Structure formats: structure tokens, C-alpha cells
Image 1: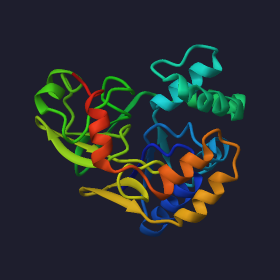
Image 2: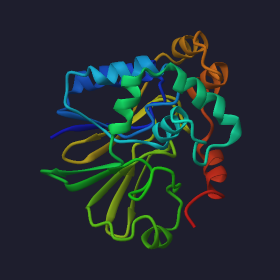
Image 3: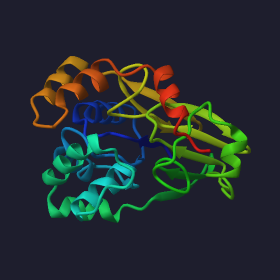
Image 4: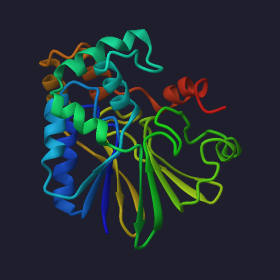
Length: 249
């Protein structure tokens, strides 16, 4: 069984379309969408595109979906800085009731038995919640005593920090799928191909054309998203430094 794991799309529809074209070319049996489909500049079109795939597709919630649903419910979004509230408010306004209902039904994790790789646990950030931060440099012992305590699957696939890695945490192989729509590091649309092994992939697409498409939306941070999340993403080392102060203690 070949599975494409697509994480952190952030409503970047051109990036998603590029990955879906590559998936169609190489062939997969199933798609796993690992959360944070929203927020982002084209939320309704992105949800519609994912809802009409011609392949079996599983979804899990990310912190982005949780925050948007809290906004729709009139609750303060948990752990969201004030400067990001306009993005959540705008995203919530774009969604139809059916979209919100769909997002609310996505589970926090999915576990699958893969014929060649064994048990695979898909989560957004860590096995225990959708918001915790860890990276390729986070202490293995710290992870074993916190977010990965009691995890007994051979493989965990996650996202959330928008940087791909493939590392061991004890006896668990932990792979970060990176981000389709908002990668940190080199530009492109990052995802995983899971088959007889797991392959970190990054699909090239027309960045300038995608950036112009985003600029034409009324997304509150359209220009910033176009320039700093599509054309010139932040460097991985810069983001590792920023995340160091917020990672699991």
C-alpha cells in the first residue's frame, strides 16, 4: 500500500494542486491529510478540492482546525497570539456550515496497519495533542518522558513545525512530513510517500504564479504569505532557533 501524507496545506491551493498532480503521476492507494488544511488564503476551495478526491482519503485535525472551530463557536482560540486572530476570524467567515461540520468530525489521530512497515500512528504535532512543538534537535530523552511516553507503534508520522525530518525516538521511527503550503527551508510543497519505505518528497511548482494568485485574494496577510511562505520561506536554522524556546520541556 502506498500512502501520500499531506500535512500543513494552509489553504495554499496551488501547492496542493502541484502535489496532487505528482501523486497522480506516480500512483498511490490512499491519501492521509494530517491537519492544518486551514487557515490560509484559499480555505473553501482547498476544502472542496480535498473533499472531491478520487482516492480514499483520511483526515486528522490540526491546531489550525481547532482554532478556527473555536472562533466559529465564539471562544477565544487556545494559545493563539492576538496578532493571528484576524486570520482566524477571516477564515471562519469564509467557511460554510457544512465545512465547519466536516472539520469538527476529523479525529485527532489515526492508526493504520501497513503491510510492510507495521503499525503507523498519524498525528498532527505529537501523539498526545495538536499543539506541542518538537524538532529534529529536541532531546530524545525529553520526548520519551513526555509526548512519546507509552507510544508502542513502530512509526509515528507528524507535522506542525513545517520542517521535514526522519529520526528515532527510542525504538520509534518519527517522520515529519513537512508542509505542503508553508514550508520552512527550501521552497516547494513538502510531503511524504509511504510505501515499502518512507520517502521525504518536495514538489516544485510555479512559485511566482502561486504568489500572485494569493496576492489577489482578500486574505488578511496575503502579501506576507506570498512573499515569506511561498517565494522565500524562512530558513530552517532560523525556525529551529525560534522553536527552541517553545519546544517540549
